[in-house]
Length: 144
Image (tube, rainbow, N blue to C red):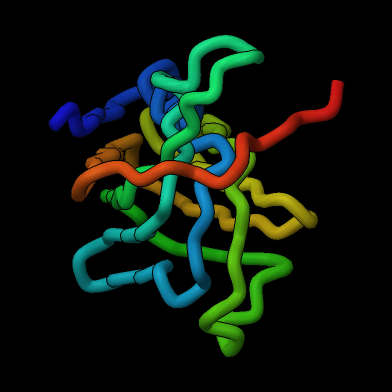
Protein backbone atom coordinates (compact mmCIF):
# COMPACT_ATOMS: atom_id res chain seq x y z
CA UNK A 1 0.00 0.00 0.00
CA UNK A 2 1.22 3.48 -0.82
CA UNK A 3 -0.60 5.57 1.73
CA UNK A 4 0.12 9.27 1.86
CA UNK A 5 1.38 10.91 5.08
CA UNK A 6 2.16 14.62 4.90
CA UNK A 7 2.91 17.27 7.51
CA UNK A 8 2.77 21.06 7.22
CA UNK A 9 4.60 23.51 9.45
CA UNK A 10 4.53 26.56 7.17
CA UNK A 11 2.48 28.09 4.34
CA UNK A 12 4.49 26.31 1.61
CA UNK A 13 3.87 22.93 3.25
CA UNK A 14 0.18 23.77 3.61
CA UNK A 15 -0.01 24.44 -0.16
CA UNK A 16 1.25 20.91 -0.78
CA UNK A 17 -1.45 19.46 1.48
CA UNK A 18 -4.01 21.68 -0.25
CA UNK A 19 -3.05 20.23 -3.64
CA UNK A 20 -3.55 16.70 -2.31
CA UNK A 21 -7.00 17.41 -0.82
CA UNK A 22 -8.39 19.41 -3.74
CA UNK A 23 -11.82 17.96 -4.59
CA UNK A 24 -11.98 15.89 -1.40
CA UNK A 25 -15.54 15.01 -0.40
CA UNK A 26 -16.67 15.01 3.21
CA UNK A 27 -19.86 14.93 5.19
CA UNK A 28 -20.59 17.67 7.70
CA UNK A 29 -20.64 14.91 10.35
CA UNK A 30 -16.96 14.23 9.54
CA UNK A 31 -15.86 17.66 10.79
CA UNK A 32 -14.84 17.32 14.44
CA UNK A 33 -13.81 20.45 16.42
CA UNK A 34 -12.08 19.56 19.69
CA UNK A 35 -11.48 22.87 21.49
CA UNK A 36 -9.87 21.32 24.58
CA UNK A 37 -7.24 19.74 22.28
CA UNK A 38 -7.00 22.82 20.01
CA UNK A 39 -7.63 20.44 17.09
CA UNK A 40 -9.94 20.22 14.11
CA UNK A 41 -10.20 16.79 12.50
CA UNK A 42 -11.77 16.32 9.09
CA UNK A 43 -12.52 12.87 7.69
CA UNK A 44 -12.62 12.90 3.91
CA UNK A 45 -12.58 10.88 0.73
CA UNK A 46 -9.80 12.55 -1.21
CA UNK A 47 -9.32 12.28 -4.95
CA UNK A 48 -5.84 10.85 -5.55
CA UNK A 49 -4.48 13.51 -7.90
CA UNK A 50 -0.91 12.21 -7.58
CA UNK A 51 -1.95 9.03 -9.44
CA UNK A 52 -4.49 10.53 -11.83
CA UNK A 53 -1.97 10.98 -14.64
CA UNK A 54 -2.71 13.21 -17.60
CA UNK A 55 -6.00 14.52 -18.90
CA UNK A 56 -6.73 11.28 -20.76
CA UNK A 57 -5.77 8.91 -17.94
CA UNK A 58 -8.46 6.48 -16.83
CA UNK A 59 -6.89 6.03 -13.41
CA UNK A 60 -9.33 7.68 -11.00
CA UNK A 61 -9.28 6.72 -7.36
CA UNK A 62 -10.24 8.02 -3.95
CA UNK A 63 -8.85 7.22 -0.52
CA UNK A 64 -10.25 7.63 2.98
CA UNK A 65 -8.08 10.24 4.70
CA UNK A 66 -8.03 12.46 7.76
CA UNK A 67 -6.78 16.02 7.99
CA UNK A 68 -5.52 17.09 11.44
CA UNK A 69 -5.28 20.83 12.02
CA UNK A 70 -3.61 21.54 15.36
CA UNK A 71 -2.89 24.63 17.50
CA UNK A 72 -6.36 25.93 16.61
CA UNK A 73 -7.69 28.73 18.80
CA UNK A 74 -11.13 29.16 17.21
CA UNK A 75 -13.26 27.90 14.32
CA UNK A 76 -15.85 29.83 12.30
CA UNK A 77 -17.85 28.61 9.34
CA UNK A 78 -20.16 30.04 6.75
CA UNK A 79 -22.54 28.21 4.43
CA UNK A 80 -22.40 25.00 6.49
CA UNK A 81 -25.46 23.82 8.41
CA UNK A 82 -24.10 21.67 11.28
CA UNK A 83 -27.60 20.21 11.67
CA UNK A 84 -27.42 18.63 8.20
CA UNK A 85 -24.89 15.94 9.17
CA UNK A 86 -25.20 13.98 5.90
CA UNK A 87 -24.62 17.01 3.65
CA UNK A 88 -21.59 16.50 1.42
CA UNK A 89 -19.00 19.25 1.00
CA UNK A 90 -16.43 19.43 -1.79
CA UNK A 91 -13.14 21.03 -0.73
CA UNK A 92 -11.60 23.38 -3.27
CA UNK A 93 -8.53 24.74 -1.51
CA UNK A 94 -6.78 25.48 1.76
CA UNK A 95 -4.94 28.76 2.29
CA UNK A 96 -3.14 30.66 5.01
CA UNK A 97 -3.43 34.33 5.88
CA UNK A 98 -0.55 35.34 8.13
CA UNK A 99 -1.24 37.42 11.21
CA UNK A 100 1.40 38.27 13.78
CA UNK A 101 3.93 35.56 12.90
CA UNK A 102 3.66 32.68 13.34
CA UNK A 103 -0.10 32.99 13.97
CA UNK A 104 -2.78 33.56 11.37
CA UNK A 105 -5.86 32.05 9.76
CA UNK A 106 -6.20 28.80 7.85
CA UNK A 107 -9.05 29.08 5.35
CA UNK A 108 -10.82 26.04 3.88
CA UNK A 109 -12.95 26.94 0.87
CA UNK A 110 -15.65 24.63 -0.47
CA UNK A 111 -17.74 24.49 -3.64
CA UNK A 112 -20.94 26.50 -3.33
CA UNK A 113 -19.35 29.25 -1.24
CA UNK A 114 -19.06 27.43 2.09
CA UNK A 115 -15.94 28.09 4.15
CA UNK A 116 -14.24 27.27 7.43
CA UNK A 117 -11.83 29.74 9.02
CA UNK A 118 -9.43 28.68 11.77
CA UNK A 119 -7.50 31.09 13.96
CA UNK A 120 -4.23 29.28 14.69
CA UNK A 121 -1.20 29.84 16.91
CA UNK A 122 0.90 28.56 14.00
CA UNK A 123 0.58 26.11 11.11
CA UNK A 124 0.62 22.52 12.31
CA UNK A 125 -1.26 20.14 10.02
CA UNK A 126 -1.13 16.50 9.00
CA UNK A 127 -2.82 14.59 6.18
CA UNK A 128 -2.93 10.83 6.55
CA UNK A 129 -4.48 8.18 4.31
CA UNK A 130 -6.32 5.58 6.38
CA UNK A 131 -6.84 2.64 4.07
CA UNK A 132 -6.97 1.13 0.65
CA UNK A 133 -8.05 3.09 -2.41
CA UNK A 134 -11.16 2.47 -4.48
CA UNK A 135 -12.01 3.37 -8.03
CA UNK A 136 -13.70 6.76 -8.38
CA UNK A 137 -16.68 6.87 -10.71
CA UNK A 138 -15.47 10.14 -12.24
CA UNK A 139 -12.69 12.71 -12.25
CA UNK A 140 -13.36 16.21 -10.90
CA UNK A 141 -13.47 18.82 -13.66
CA UNK A 142 -12.40 22.42 -13.25
CA UNK A 143 -13.50 25.23 -15.56
CA UNK A 144 -10.84 27.43 -17.00
